[in-house]
Image 1 (tube, rainbow, N blue to C red):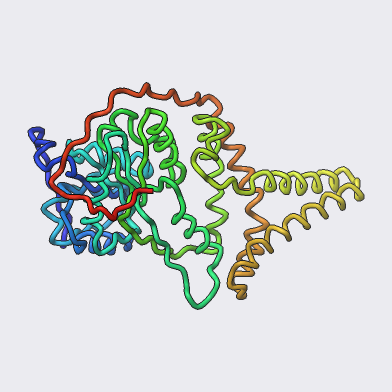
Image 2: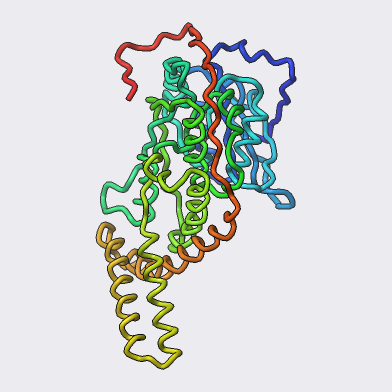
Length: 368
């Protein structure tokens, strides 16, 4: 199977497929997991998307193999370049290339839609009221049944309770146009989904909970993944600049341990400075604070896990590195986003009347 592209002309009738017509947008780095995503989408029961846009975000100048698309989806698929600017920019490129369909459904390239995903999505969209600008999905993260999950597996499992995760998220195209899509200052797959949802809600829309199910497997990761993830502290600074200090509550996002990381980094720095200034008592006291805090942090990560040698070693090493990494990225975010002004909420405008669709909604369907 080879890469396939199809251009959509400007005369496409957005209403031809009805209010439930949708396009799927998948930004990808060409990871092997994309094959499972596309295969599951091709095999899912129910009405297929009117269009599918794969945004190849591997960047130019790289020796990359063409993206492959299963036969049932080839005639629907357009492959466009994302330019390597990150998932927020890639999703914007994708939904703008999808044509004037009423709904845009974002999928990540490492998820597996359920066997009835297309049918369930059709029901989700049919049940959306005129004030609902987006419909979430149920995300399942399978964990090992024969042992306790590792730190990385527990981290990934948090996606199952994330409020507005774009691993599987449907937005009205008119809503994306109204708020300007994703904020491309979020260069990584972190917080760009919460930022968009908060702006959508501020514009007067609501977000509904759907019933379609998508699996998000735990992908392989190195033992240093938890250190690299500390870059998200810079994105949290941007979120605070844009949405105020209470955005955590509005987004139901966990606060994390940044205050403790700052304290531990301060204690370690103070210990070094006191040692350099030949103040051994002060250096010893500060070092003791750092050691106790680091030990508490490591134990908090080790005890819920499998406690095998590899996991204990990884937790011990990364628990030393995470606090300074978090502090560095927090300071970097404060500098990088120092001139960012708060988001200006869009004035809620008139909402369209609900459009009747021929697809009935079962009575037993419950919207939470």
